[in-house]
Length: 387
Image (tube, rainbow, N blue to C red):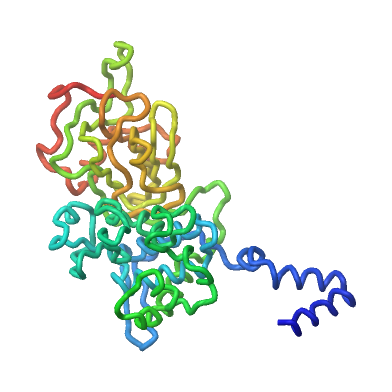
């Protein structure tokens, strides 16, 4: 190290401009991180074929790649992660679940009610990273949420667990560790050597999902691939249609006003599901909507935006820029903003978030939304309307 510093000192004295740039690049981690390719997620392919380090072939489907996109997106929004951290996280999730959101009905029967990609059976582990509630990683509801699991894996000052259990950013010097060793430091697996096997697959995912888009107009908005399916935004049997799209008596003013959404009364905390694959373009508080999530989708080649309103502060489980899958748990029913009771206010805007909304229930029916069955939506007037 002393010899290296001596060489640098000579460069500074003999070639001041070049020497200064060299010192900054070598000794400033932030500059090194900024020189790496972007972690912005582009279009998600329908499948990706790759090989593990031992030569085994693996093909990931679009659902698995969507989970990978969520992990990458959360990493891009978490200071200190960068591309190396996203690589470690992908290696861990590939090893633990092959990038599947796994329920575990034997240990937690309630885990099966959340959107999932199958059943796991490793003790009481859940989700993409096979995290255990008894180890303090989070509740069942939290661990069945891919965004929460990614935040927990990365940890650090903005992580949900305050360093216990430790996330990647809570491990001193993780950047200097082999990526497989870094993954094991978080997962604490009984099989510590298996993570390295998935490094080539994780690298292939990063290369495929973060490739820069070309010839894309600056005002085009996020590039959103065609959705794989349409689903109803609340679990069957948990809601009542209390105030549909159209003219109604405003519950606050008593005047006739046009209601641009559909209201579904449900108990506070009921899971809200994304109606289609897409990208979150807004997640936060907005006027009378209260806490609002806007997701943009591509359906039948057309851009469509969906609005989910009135969640409580703790009920928003995604952030702007997140990539979500149809049926993913994105929030919980609440009653924030201009609201008279716990419910989901849903709007569908074909074209863009600024376009005029259409009747959400009719749109979902026209697109054969899973979970929307005859009789599952009770006509308005059965119980008191909610705003």
